[in-house]
Image (cartoon, rainbow over all chains, first blue to last red; front, top):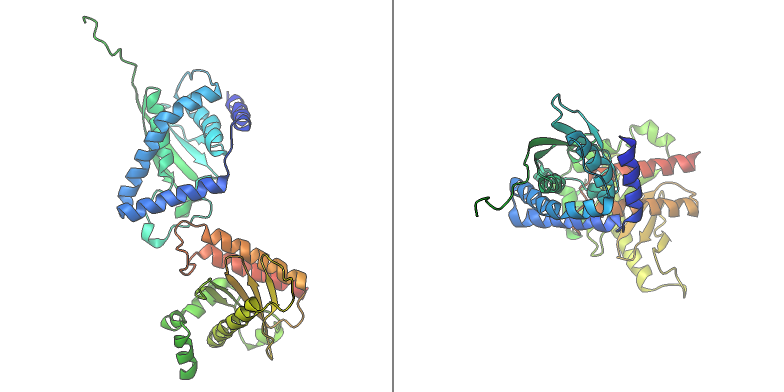
Amino acid sequence: MAPLPARSGDAVFANIEHVNSELFTLTYGAIVRQLLTDLEEVEEVNKQLDQMGYNIGIRLIDEFLAKSNVSRCVDFKETAEVIAKVGFKMFLGVSATVTNWDTEGTSCSLVLEDNPLVDFVELPDTCQGLCYCNILSGVIRGALEMVSMKTEVTWVRDMLNGDDVYELRVKLLKQVLEEYPYKDDE
Amino acid sequence: MDDYSKSCLIDLGFQWVLQDPKAATIRESESGNSGGGEEERRQLGKMIVCVAVVGHQNNPVFLQSFTDSDDALKLHHIVHCSLDVIDERVNNPKKSGPTLNDTFLGVLYPMDDCKVYGYLTNTNVKFIMVTTEIDVKDGDLRSFFKDLHSAYVDAVSNPFHIPGKKITSKSFAKRVSSIVKSFRSGTTS
């Protein structure tokens, strides 16, 4: 199963429109700087980035499913693989690896060695505790919520704080089955 | 550090140099390229002594010296004086057609024991290099300044860097040190 998402990820990335990565990086940097100036609190900025990511994710999932032609995932393991190989590759141009599955298969780590959002960035001392890429956790959370999975996404390792890779912990909280909006007796 | 030099530098706006007198020594130990004792200096007679980046309003953006701190003040003075030479060259081009972009200004100021080289970008950011090297090839210099320029561009692309303020990025300082080291090893071989 592993090679199939990887190959289709590369294929989708080759066919999709590309944007200059420096433009993308500088735009994201400007957003974070402006949020810091407006909100001044690092925790507030983290929350706001997560919220922005969530709003992006709930819309991004449709584009992803339309353009990538992946079939329905059987379980959460496959979902994680698809996110790492196809999703990240399609939108960021880098693919992630899935590691550290827990025993129940509901929680895993996505490891990114290269992250285009943080090119040229060095966190100053006043911004320790800032999750610079928090938008990514919001995107994943929002996208998965639209396909009936409630998840919790947190950052475990961050290169801007001195670690060697970026690691996101994705935990499946529950699968919300689709509810029929109308009551039967009406 | 005599008082006359101190007052000159304060007048010229280099106050920040004097406020943290340990800055030169700290940078020197970080760069790992320090001149060391007297013997080493005699052996490594030809080397880059200092690298400076000055903004378009002639504000100091980055300054790193690679020798003992006693000379640091003198070096800063030299750098500041060479800014005048740059302004002269820019306002009165000697030849009719100087290179239009990324003007490599060449030797600005030959002194008794060292030379000052300058490099001007389109945005009027100046890179100044003071070296005791007697014979430097033009090609080496140009590639040195090109590497410096690309390191500068990466440092300035940091969203947390405020344009016009000093570059506080440690990775920029490290890159400058490695560029200086490779320049030294390239020419002394």
